[in-house]
Image (tube, rainbow, N blue to C red; front, side, top):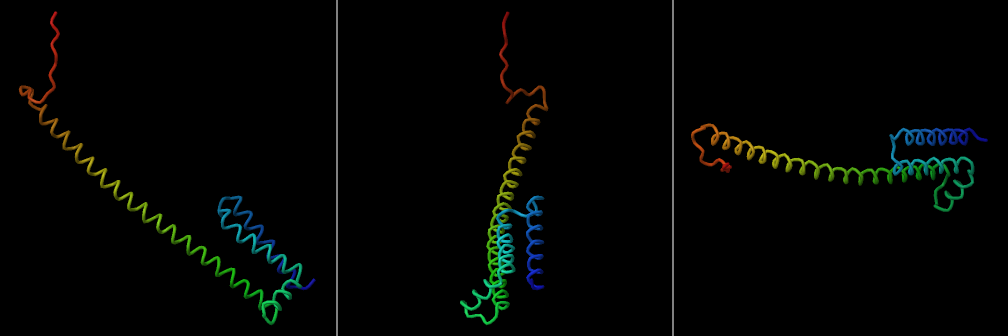
Length: 144
């Protein structure tokens, strides 16, 4: 077995181990782990079957299999970058919406707090003078 094939297998095994370990520790979601698992399996296939790289290179018009592998790596990285860019866009939208909702809730809370303080002050003003019974609820007297 050629040295580059052994290196490819070792790298693929390390990637598989790291991805599975990160998934186990909940550091990497399955959604993203799938991409890396497919890449690792692809590297294993190209390392075990070098004829596959030759076949794909000749059928796509690339001169050497190594150039095809570099092209494939560039395409994979571009797709991963595009996917992560869309995810960032969605997350930015969610954060903006959450910040706006939080700001609205804070305004509503402040309005409610001011209204409550106004009512408390009004009630304290009404009940501060014991001789003035205007505004207090009527108490029914029970006759015996």
